Amino acid sequence: MGPKRDLGRPFNGESPVIPQEETCADPSMGSPLTARRGSPSARRIFLLAIGLAVMAVPALQAQDRPNFIVVMADDLGYGDLSVYGSTLISTPNLDRLASEGIRLDSFYSSANVCTAARGGLLTGRYPIRLDLVSDVARPTNEVHLAEEETSLAEALGALGYSTALFGKWHLGSRLEWSPLHHGFDEFYGVLHSNDMTPLELYRGDQVIEDPVDQTTLTQRYTAEALRFIEANREQPFFLYLPHSFPHVPLFVSERFEGRSRAGLYGDVVETIDWSMGQILAKVQELGLDENTLILFLSDNGPWFEGSPGPFRDRKGSSWEGGLRVPFMARWPSRIPPGQVSTAAVMNIDVFPTLVALAGGNSDGLTIDGEDILPLLTDGTPPSREALYLFNNDRIAGVRSGRWKLVVESFYRQALPSFDNPESYYGPDGLLFDLELDPSETYSYTRENPDVVARLRELLLIGQGELSSVVLPNMWNR
Ligand SMILES: [Ca+2]
View 1: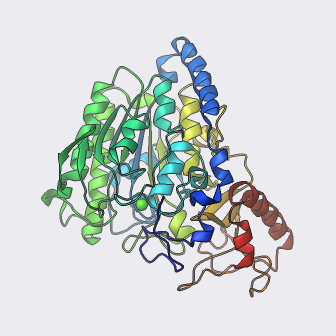
View 2: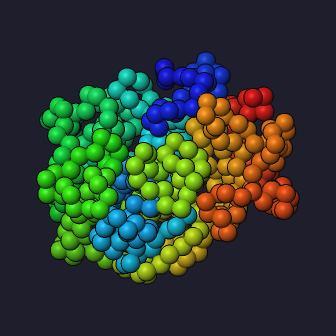
């Protein structure tokens, strides 16, 4: 692997470059994380487990096997939807997911850039376990989701689901690493971000357009989605629709140009909203409404345009604005309408939730996420005590309940460690009360030593499990 490396802060949010000696992806280091990946034997156990579950399927009623539609925007900010407070962008169809289902206000991505975030979503594992934290996948590098990882599409496919990805993959820029090699029956879309070249449009393993006409990309992903839903109306399906926008460069078709009050960015988001309207209409038209769980989320915070809502910083940062994203879920037969929850949840929770709903389990896999169906259906929060918030390969923060301990952040070209004993904030770091102060403006470290002590214990546990390669560097820099 040859990711670009540099000692400074990644200026380009797509280039989380980190020093050579801190890179867990460096093969010369013999990363112990590699050993923790799902081994072939672990995967066999998992497949056996879901194979047994498949045998039990005929006894289940049709409504026990819901369809899954997961729609993800790229670089959409927390504050870019009207249901999350935007006054300049109108998103009535996306807002419906919340009014007819549940909106989560403390939903985190597992990374502050595209590739790692998608790895977390599709495997239920912190991206550092996947070796996806040194850089994003590019046409010029070898960053990709490892073959031995079990993707959500593989897991659901083994349970009898039809699977499709229409949109942006970004977990490997070569055909041999494409969605077709990670459990998706169908693929229509692009292998990476829309600012990378070459940007080829694929149908299956065939390039059908090069370069892709981006002005109609959202509509064409949507058309494929509607076709797939209709074709699979009689059997359970998993449709993953990761839009290419509002990641830059921005394009819209003439039909949507000038519709919003937020410039071209807003027009692009309103096109994504239109797409959700089409999907909702199709699901209802086919009588699949009660039996279909629709999720909508973003992969990370907004880049140079877009709103992070009340939160600090943006894409590429491990402050809340880089990681906190919209999340809504609608499933009329199971999720009561109009719910809002502030429980802390992460995109790694999607894998175990959907696999459980499909009748499988994650036995034999090292999964960091938790089944959040109890939260979606009756508001029961996840049982875990902490979520780890990463900056590339390092844990930058620990979220537990209302509290968040922050131990590092970038300043200009430097990466100050707040828990360095020589730091002004050392040795404990900065403690924020996200209920009282969601913008992370005032530290309560001095006022709450007991809370700090517990969060530091949790930090050490996380570092031991997830950052052991870099722990010495954290203390030496
Ligand atoms: Ca992104």
